Image 1 (cartoon, rainbow, N blue to C red):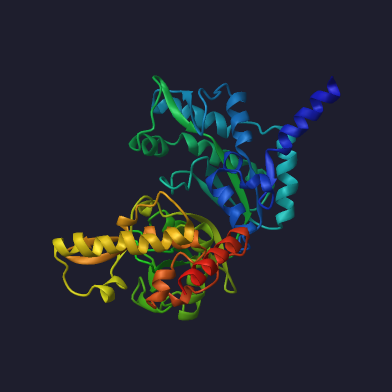
Image 2 (cartoon, rainbow, N blue to C red):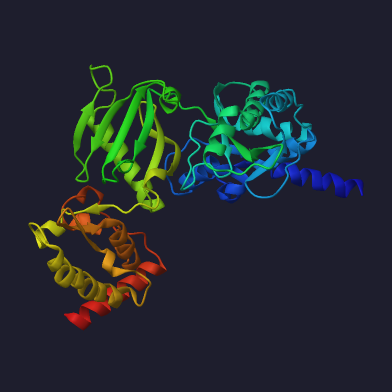
Length: 421
């Protein structure tokens, strides 16, 4: 019985500390949003500092040990608390918590293998999702140099779940609270080797306000934590779809932090991440003087569920203004019965509403790039194929990843060409 109990205890703590290269790290319920996205980036071959995850199981065990067992199920559970004072009491109890010896014994060697100062970052379950980013709501501790400080930093990240700002954030987004309880999302903690950053910042693979297909880069000297927290004004760079730098705005009016070659190199990495994720991405990065490191990626939540329109190519097919009668009887019919039939031949019967391919906006014809991207991906073509045809994004040219789906798509394209050649 004693041996069996010890084995179960050892298994429990072995699942509490996992490397970013582990398949388990890809599971968001264990690694949180930040941890699982970093594990995915490393598996895709992108430059991510090495590290490991102290999983959500350690946090759940902590609440149990302190008598604040989760009530309910799912990523957001509740603890008995009804006031700011009770929140403060929970945070103080976490900071004074004595880390279990078996857990500390796994955290220490993992820290030693990283060989140098580390960044300790909260990674909440549900963080960096498609609809909420939770950016800046939890704590990060940088330049942690030894095990005692690391254990303290981990507890700081755990305690930040009970900050008033996170409670307000959840309540603003309609997270229901049980009477006399406050939301306590389960969280993991990511520990990564520090990047000695000469510059850092954020980058967007599309304009987060308009959805325009350009890369927007913001940069500050040194570490980027002040930028993420909204405390400094950054340099701003814009790279258009053709891979050209079209805007450079140094924050201080002096020399830009990044030169053109660095801006274009980072833009290529950002676009590669967005293509691999099949969604526009918001990315945190750092430059160590030799290469760019990716510190986080998440969907651009502002663009989730929105449809992006462009008339760059459709204006050549239907120049000038289009009257409502002409759009209804001719243009709309053509998009449904011509383009719709072409894609039906290529992808087979589907639930796609082909009438949405074209839309009349201010009396001009626009193409729904969101619908077209989905259709091109089903065919096996790059999602930005329409822009490539209009020479808007030839800087992103590339073949889709090879796989069984690509082979099937190629066979459909060949059959279509033979049938209509």
